[in-house]
Image 1: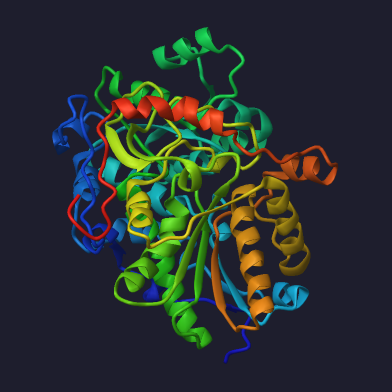
Image 2: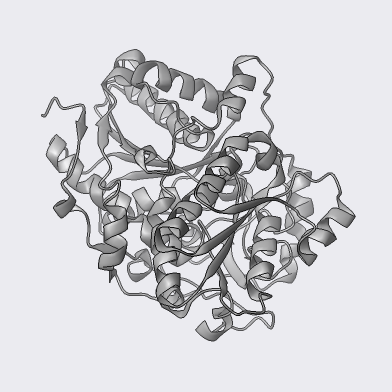
Length: 464
């Protein structure tokens, strides 16, 4: 086996196509629905997204070519390295071999630019002049700001208020790329005004910020604005699969065969799906792989929420999507893993979970921060609070391998660095953070209204 600490691919080895799991799911994905409960057509999404991205959203083609213009932007940081975590392994005394895909090397410091540059490019090709979006922790807003600066279109970001206050450097980075960033809920939109009138001290939520961003796009009198989403939807997930495809090639160079465990943190699902979906395809075809999405115990979408049709935003401007959801009106507690505080999970990730292809897990934030500190002391990288969930699960699995005496291969996605999240680390190190398990009565309060929506089938490997 190679003793290399990290493996790089050459640019000529970078994937030239995105992988679409919708083509291989044992049961085809269920469609998004309109207000009348009937499946929507592409034309209903046209005021929100350009048609070239809508085509990807509804596609069931297995492979979709990456345009040369998008590849040229991806070359700025891709392919990203795959590291062997020798020092973490030694500290844990585990027989497991641990690898991590380092997505923190992108200009915005996370996996998010993989789809941001694609979405900006497709919108530019369609003639769009301005993009609006939401952001939780600020990673997505930074990524889209960067991408818009490359293609030459305007960008406006509605940032969840608690993160706007907790993470000032993210909004500074957005400004450096030329984007406008405002705290959400804001008085600029009707959706924001309505929330502020009802909950003036709200910390905000991604659902609220999405409503504001969509409203701003569809009410632009010029007709030259569109909305851009950083996670959840199929075309976003599609663009991230370049991660897992690179990992496969890099594991081969390391001398590894099929990994035993794939891990990624999960909020809306994009970074998890990015590394996991190429391996989910292998699992569908018989590979023995444990695939683990990890979420906060305070926002347990996959582990405790129902699988239901629900809106992706609080103002119900999005179609009804079949997903695990805590309810579109859910206001998450202000934990520091801001990017994992979304109420719903990607429909494709949800479908894979319903099929039994995933083993979701939730972890409390103190264990996540403790794991991140150990990782920083051994591997040297301070990860984003979101990524700390993947690190924590990786350490759990490595300890389990030690107990069982098994030489497992564990791969996780290091989806972003934490250099702009030092306030959260400072509070952890000073003992100011606590664990918070979402009470069952809170889940019931927010999910009970979902019973009024059409209910998706929970069939496994059959017709919905």
